[in-house]
Length: 258
Image 1 (cartoon, helix red, strand yellow):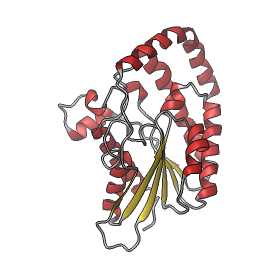
Image 2: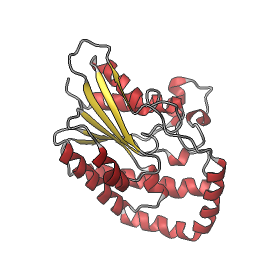
Image 3: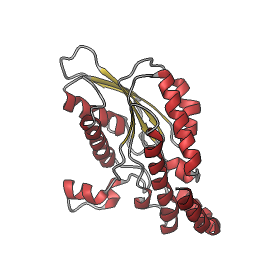
């Protein structure tokens, strides 16, 4: 893993000035979208007495950038699919911030969690740690610290890390940025898998997001552009498909006991 990162860094470093100017052009061309509104909600469609509690935390994808409300974003959709599959009521809450890395989530968001009990913790990270060129070794330490911090608050609650963002597929990014950051985010995903092995009751949905597979399932006339709101962040469609697949993973691995 280290050798792969070092090799990638040796290729990338000479290209940093080019990537810097490409990044400036991307930031200028991509609209600044707000985070979704409504950070908590519930599905109360079943006769179960007490709703299960889901807490989601992470970066812009969990913050719902690209949709108006969290109900149509990842967390609300995830909870809805989970409630339907388990035939149970679910309440959910989001603690997320656009631009946050794993370290910032641990330092700034986890201390703000008001709940003392939860049935499932969902974590979505990886994009900003790639954009800031966080090394796989440091990322592993940051993820380990995040898990420990969550387990201090929720000792027996399962933790689920979502699949990594498909940076190589971002339409707004240049080929150079897709290559460098896309390869890095895949390395970070591998390190998540290794890091969670040291902890009990921690899971990672390692399946790579594939728009080709999604298009085949949904509508062959669609293109990859349909999955983005601004060339970087997910569209409503992406949140819905991604959340459904993550809910399927949670059910198949029996992460929640009803």
